[in-house]
Length: 373
Image (cartoon, rainbow, N blue to C red; front, side, top):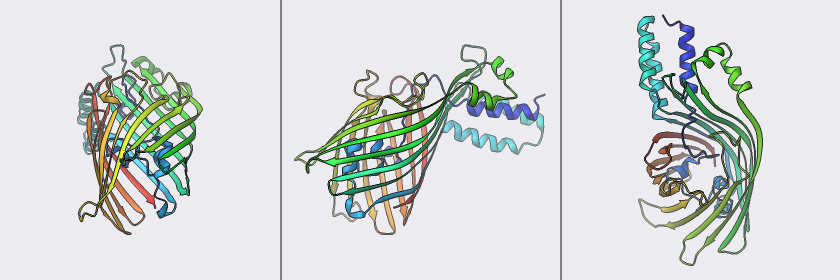
């Protein structure tokens, strides 16, 4: 008979297991929900303080007439379908009073998610951004927790479960300079402290550390360190109204290099276009097309980002935006609703875990709460 203590251990292991060491996930330092909803394309657009994560030259397109952009809280929660379903199953499990029936249901749940990736991510980027004459800047604090885990039958080389994830925090600063009305340059720096875990657990290892699994994860097998990286970018406005952007991000890399959650430096290219309309139902729209990590020979579609966003209503008290796009070959869709200084956003997108688009697609759901202006 499985004891209640062992049930807790199994649930804990099943949760941590979501840090998947066998995926090709493209880890990002920060995902702006407003950008993810339109396929993650922003290198040729910019327009907000989060441009430091895509192209620091994009700070130059911050709307100067609105004063400073201040985000006191900018909290995002993301989970894939497996984590959402496991959470529902866990709640149902608590309603089963008979211990034997509960144990059988727990085993069924464990079997159902064998070999499947589970992902959970939480992040917050609070910042201040402002444009002053031909300069613009963004300064903020970032916190991010990204966990992937998956369980296995325990008899093969994969062991009982594998885990890969990271906890990061630090400061971000970026500045742009308008060389002319058509050309802007940007530079940013990020100081990041990180803890990363990358481990494959066999049953023997689990038994050995069953009484100190938390301290074993944090103190014995995690990697801690700091990374200071720089970003460079440019943004060019053509005579036809299109924007051409390029960025060299995370120069030097972020995190522990042997971890799946390591964030390498990338050379990126993007196109953007924006247009204001005098339409009752569509105030303005913008579109972007990005190609990231140009020097990497991996799958072309996986590195492509494309999307559009429409502004449907905008007043002092209420703003409504929607977006569609393709991210790593899969659709994205989302909605932003601002009520005074509170904005709520919901986006669905897919992270590609395989080596090429469509090999192992992982549908995720991202919720964001922003308090600021």
